Length: 168
Image (cartoon, rainbow, N blue to C red; front, side):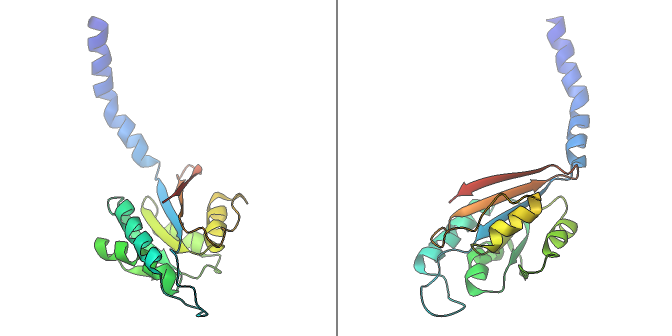
């Protein structure tokens, strides 16, 4: 009984130090998605299809409580509209980025250290950005019919990077 009492006191005393250490980690989370399904036509900038609108709604439901502080998209209707419902619900502006600009990685990390952000891209640019963030060539372009991948990259200021790959 005495040992149990000492153990509880030890936990109470060390809890503030444990939470302080976790806040020092500076965890940045970047959620990357490919745009939702698009209308199949000859337009270089097609709208979302009805299936794409449904997927955008699911994305909103998945991340509405994820403490997203910024949302980025390439400058196409399909990528912007994939994240627009979530952005509106969170009262955030969708920021445009150029996936060909290699500075986007530094911009995301410098401007959003310790935050959670969402990035909407394409079948080729999303895996490329994940690879850049993790500093390895691990992910290939997504199949043209694959719209449901989510990559969650976490980066600590201790240079530890992890990726979780999900489907929705």
